[in-house]
Length: 118
Image 1: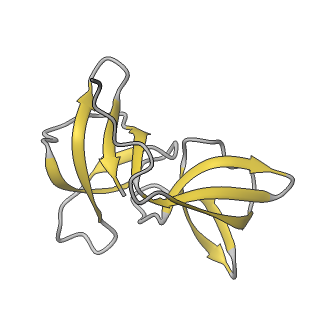
Image 2: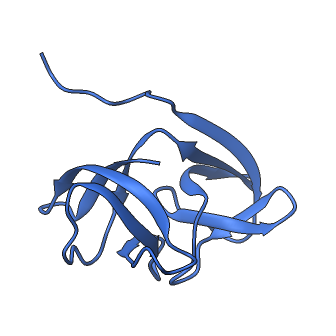
Image 3: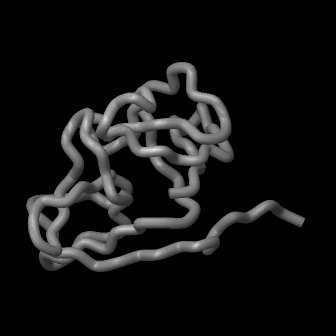
């Protein structure tokens, strides 16, 4: 039997997209019903899973795999993150008002990504 968290509490919603947002990048609000790729050190509302014809499908909850450039001292469990300059995760302090708490359940150092619950 394999371990799988796929589909647990997964919610994907459609927003208008501002600019190019690549799938796998973190997004933040850009205006009414609109998202953009999250700015460096900013909070985020989800992960872009698709962006076509000016519409972005954004995963706002559930299990996700998200890239991180610098692993730092990240451990398992609840950690705080902000967006990095390329739409990936960046470790932050809980006291940072932009920090978003995520539950880290797996760390893949080879591929530089985390498996988290949003």
